[in-house]
Amino acid sequence: MALTAPSGLTATTRNGEVGETSIALAWTNNDNYDQIYINVTDGVVTEEGPQAGVLESYNVINMTSATLYTFKIRGWADAFGYSAYTSTATAYTRPDQPGITSLEANGATQLDVVWANNDTYSATYVGYSTTSGGGAGYTFSPAQSGSATTYSITGLTAGTLYYVIVLGVANSLNSVYSSQWSQTTDAGSTDTLTDTVTFSDTVTSIATKGTLVTDTVTFSDSVTDVRGLVQAISDTITFSDYVVDSKNIATDYGIYLGTSDGYLFQLSDSVYGDSGETIQASFQSKQTDFADQNPLMEDRLKTVYLIRVHYVDKYASVPLTIGVSNDNGVTYDTTTHSVGTASGVTKTKDFHFNKQGHMFTFKISVSSATVGFQVVSLTIYYHDSGDYFEI
Image (cartoon, rainbow, N blue to C red; front, side, top):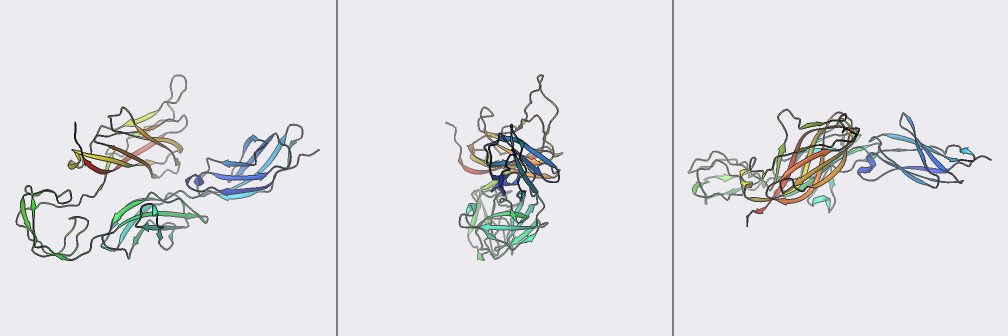
């Protein structure tokens, strides 16, 4: 007696970031199977199995993004052997998400976006919103070419904070959104300033919101463009004292941890313990209050909300852990992601936190018996969270 084959096999692209490397299968069992075997083809035929004979669904994982896969399944019973295969089912994995690398205001009504393409797209779209996370919905640009890496958002409102994302499309499937960046358009107003501004000493750098005071500076002409706080002023300005430089310091900051040659460390895939166990490779930063890159942060509380890892994509599916500590490395808040597709290009991966403190230590580690990891640098993003007092 022949074993009746399963039927009704379907293959469905999964939602979200998991859809870059996984496809969901479903079918109907038409006999009593001891085992189910799943045949997977993407140019190379592999078979996943055996799976439990009672299964009627399965998520195939560890797949390549933006790739077409073909599936068929068959049952096995110890008394009868294999059944025939089902009809084939096909599905694409989602493309990997693009990554924004720059977002700058260009006047009062325009933002210029630059991003990196992390997959092969048929089109890309830039979305923007005045609500974080696109709560009221993103407004999207017309379709850009799949190779585009820049776009100018125009027709915006002066002095307004915008949140921007980019997505890629491949095989009629959207990637997940890139990490969200934010920027404020220039104020764009025209005012005449006749008051005096007082500074605490000879001005070498205005680095906060105009809070340093004593000497006198008088503006004698119109200010036609103020970018941010005091970033760029057109037209004539007369100063009654010597000003070396003035610049804008925003409420969000970024610092870089890395060495001048671009390499922190290479996590080895060939060094193990005496018993063959995996050795966890890790890097821990010095303790920092960010004052070496922004002296005004010395006596301030800060909240670290994002750590962006820049890395060379040498291996696929690397278990990467990022940690942040506010007690000199005694305890860490950690986040782990599986990163990499072995594309060989430089990529970024964002790790989100909500860690408040005065001094911080950062750690990156990988524990894997089969893959290594090459990190180029970390960018730490944080908010000023108020005055710091020791009691």
